[in-house]
Image (cartoon, rainbow, N blue to C red; front, side, top):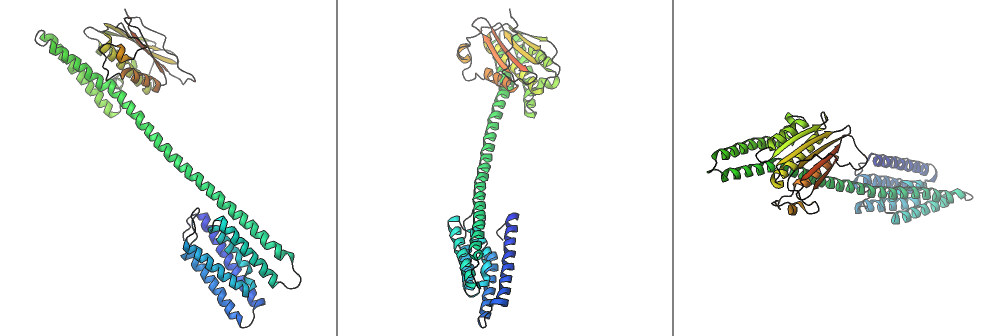
Length: 414
């Protein structure tokens, strides 16, 4: 059978059972009241043909599924069974009420513009047959009842068909919308992951390689004139290489900062300040309050912001001193990175404002802002030519309804 919906199968079975009951009662009525000599055999044969065509049609020409147009085979079956019923009705008015299953079959399979005229035709034939077979005075119910019943059945079935069509359209729209939403979310997730990977690589591998390049270039410049200093630069480059390798392995493993696997956030920031200190630049770490163990995403974001800010200090600021300050309040944590370098004009793009800045990079500040925003906080940058730079990140420890205030504590650097 074509029908796979349990409700559809149940309805079809009910109609089939009703058909056989009506067919059997019509045959019994004919044999007990309307039989007429020699034609009795023909009528019984016609009843049998009528039943066989109906049964074979259910298997060989199933009704179309909801929303599908009727097939040629089903239309041929519907025409054949209706034609046999009309002939049977002419010679045996007892077959009148077999019209109900045919009415349902037509309304169920045909579009309303064809089903409604078919229902009207069947109803008219039923009324004519009832009037022709009536004995005595005309009963008004014979004229009124069939059209009333047919009208109710037609209205209900047509309404259900149209409602089902609207529901199918809504379901198709819902499925399409869900698919489009899934595609959009997948694309957004890919872009977000791509951005996250870019910031992770910038703050780990790229910064480490940049430091190694600077140390190796410095070692090359003094290789002949000051071998001890050159070897010191090589040792520093090897130390950074080891650290960068650990970051890369950690990056591959779970993208978490390697320092946070060994220290709390204050310890990781202190270790970072110690590593960044060297000839020509002193980095000091200060802590105000005890943050305890912060959420992992907050600690990772603040540590990466500090790494990115100190990388900018080392490469672009020409500073001699820098301070990393972690301030912990009840509901917020602040991170300030201040330096006494050359500074820049905040109204000019950083690659243009900072002498010697690599115009093909310029990813540091945007990455830091993204990290602060992903942690639920904000990042501000205060700078002026010749007056140093202060990068401040403020991250709330509890969700806030409005914008997060920027850090107000700025450590002066002399």
